[in-house]
Image 1 (tube, rainbow, N blue to C red):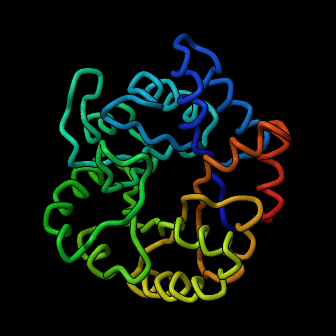
Image 2: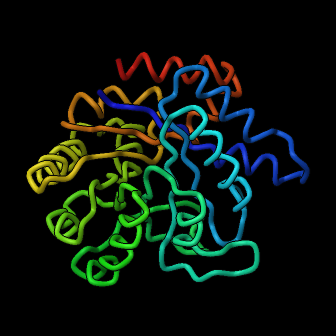
Image 3: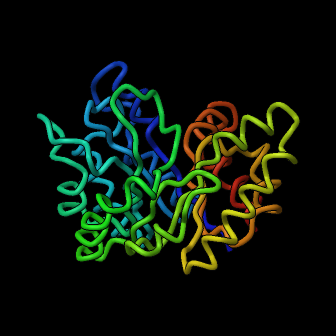
Length: 247
């Protein structure tokens, strides 16, 4: 079964655009979980442009109370700064069930590529070990064709396939040409002993075709499209529609 983790970054973006506490991130998380979502994701960046450190701590408590997964995403190489203690420090304090490491920088509007494991594996290895010592399952953001065996060799439990190129191909009517690379990478990851997650620009329109073509996907993390669709359909209804696609 593929599970759904709802990424609430865009709720935080809307809140931060005016200051204050509305919309309420915790209320949004409760709504998603009460509708059946299997977990919550946030990706706090050092510039605090959406989810902040205080959101991380509050969501960690909430997800523990619900008994569901908290997935914390971030760049483990980003240095601390005022208001942002660093990704590993956040994990040490919040103890998420899953830590997803992503190679994004401040200048990126959103995550747009995975790790180059041939280049990055040596630097990632001690960070993966530190997170494992916290009982965090470690997932590494990966492009299609990535050397997933290297990800497994440094101790990662999963890779998260970056699905932005698939979503672009789907929108252009050419998803059939993009899907084989995802399927091949998923099979290679499974052969290396890795679990497979997927995320970025997945939507109600393109999710089913992706899951039909790509084997062994354990979890999808969906935020931007889901929150956008919820503006029209309501948050609980939108979550339930995703869950129906996963059934």
